[in-house]
Image (tube, rainbow over all chains, first blue to last red; front, side):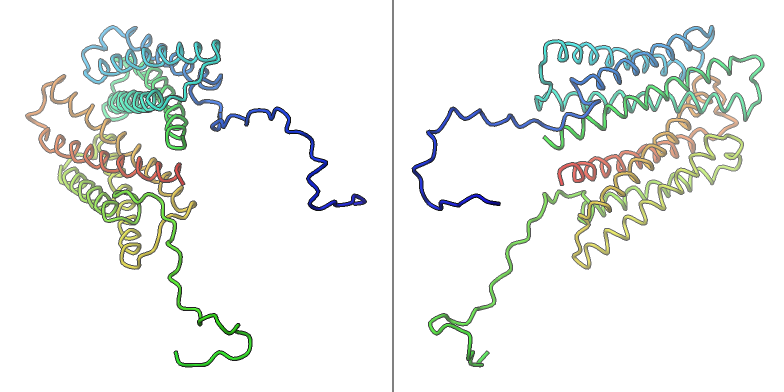
Length: 177
Length: 177
């Protein structure tokens, strides 16, 4: 380079300008975390699959004779309420450009996601166990509604997949704050 | 040592003493994380409960007629192998004072804990669903082994509790590295 280095001359230094404020330190803003479009999408997916699972299960006339199926219905109601609430919060955060990075709020999201996720997986597995028992072990699919049971269980598993993604992202956010 | 230092040592400077090495930067070392006594205890507890669950289930003569019970046995074998391996690694780390804070290693622990934990919960829930079906819904406990089923399911749930604690601590370690 052809520039001279005038060493220590302070004279030429221009008067300090209004320095721009330092860029705000922002945490990694991964899609899927609370308050992002990805996060809202995950909540809507959870809500959708939970509602379908609930609807399929309650459409079976005698589902209430099996405890596990009643539990699945209850778990899906809880999951729907949770995902709906979080979807509302995410929408609010997106529209009003609010941050959801409050430590207490994120902890609450993590706990809620974990609890509902665990209950949803438990509901899916207990119902899957009984569906497999009726279908494979007893071979009594004809008088029962194996197809509908299977659809409800599959929808519950899909709900669980999406709530698990939400949980991991939110827990990561909490841990890396 | 009583050796003179000719040549290059400037006169007035005393011979360099053995300076203590700078304190090693250590991450938060919570009990329960890999390579701690708490971590080893968790692994031993998981292994113990998984082995008891496995033993109780295989002691039932016709458990293999129900798919979910076969799955529980398989899940308990996998869980036992995983917890045993991790217990060995923890023991090695404790005895040889090695750190298990390698990023790749911790990621592997997190994935393994999550996979085995999920499979264990799935096994517990599917078996619990069937046990409740036999006991409450069908009222056919007399010809079956409800007591043993319940013990096996309870042990599997306890295994899951301990693997979940391990998972959370290891995931926290991974995220806060």
